[in-house]
Length: 468
Ligand code: C2O
Ligand code: CU
Ligand code: CU
Image (cartoon, rainbow, N blue to C red; front, top):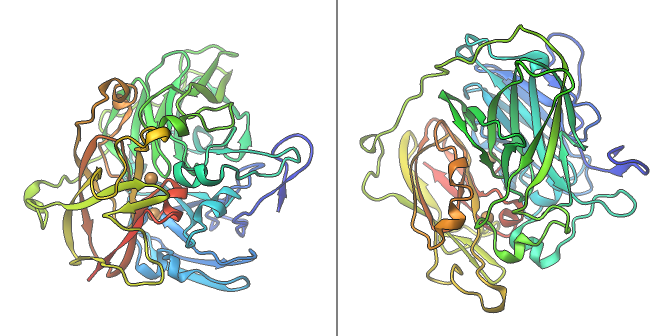
């Protein structure tokens, strides 16, 4: 498809076209002017059937990121379909209310397929959330963040070669909901911004330019128990943030800019210089702007209590004293989890997990055995942060510890790590150890876990669980 993103020539993209039916039964909404797939809206408990027809010139398969579905509906890379074929997904919505996403999970082609446009958002609603009366309709805004580069002809450029494969792709332009220079007109009242980082590799540090703190009401797996106020919030690829944004009392014409703030220590110095010279990874740059276009006194109040979550204690997990390791390592063109890269065509020494258990995992940077956390000679240190995503049910972060040797850099993003609530993706910075408790209920089969830096995923920084 060709879409008008920049002035001049239209841009060729790939897209989830969607079948936008009319009427109350329709759950798909097109984002205006965007190449993104339609926003899907489901209710908890709903039975869902989705037909994926592959009109691309190469194999593909779609994955519902963050949803608790059977293996056949999870978009395993081995389920990829050839051009012209159709795959039918059937599942019941077991997730609580939240903002999820869908994107391809094609073996060694996830990054390029997402880059060329294949991604979309999923909103799930439930009773608990509805009872809160949060801002909805025109006051609930999806914000899908992506970075892209364009060539002289306005075509998507996926440049970077070996450095791109190693550190991930960093583009020169920020797109919000598929649009450049995104601006939003609002009324002077409370809004709900549902922010998703659908970039291949770029990590954002969300902050308002006038210093207004962020009010976080939810993360990957839905609402927090209570709102949290932070000076800024980190958002790595695959993660979501549900923000309560209140423009009450602001005058018509006043303008706010959401920026990505400066940080250090998440990417190697070498990757820090990527981004086409315009949007250096750890620099401060604008993401989108909001202008108050209408004044009103009619605004909902932020609830003090948002939801009730169950919490896992050590005693609830099957392996309280020996967490399963998820050891992340980066060597020369060699990314690995627990010492090896994903084997698509071989049966790997797979992680076996008994169904209907809760498992403790420890995710950390592995600097021994071929890992490359220390010096890399002329390339400097190669260690970088990895957003680690586990398929299936949402997990709980029990603990995050930093024992690195650069607390100065760590302090540039530490306060923005939101570890409460339910998560499916967690950013693990160099020097950190993160302990998570994850349930494996209901479904047996093979489920992926991987780095959500999509270039890393395609380089094999992925493994699978066999739930038996
Ligand atoms: Cu969002 Cu396995 O991916
Ligand atoms: Cu996923
Ligand atoms: Cu990674």
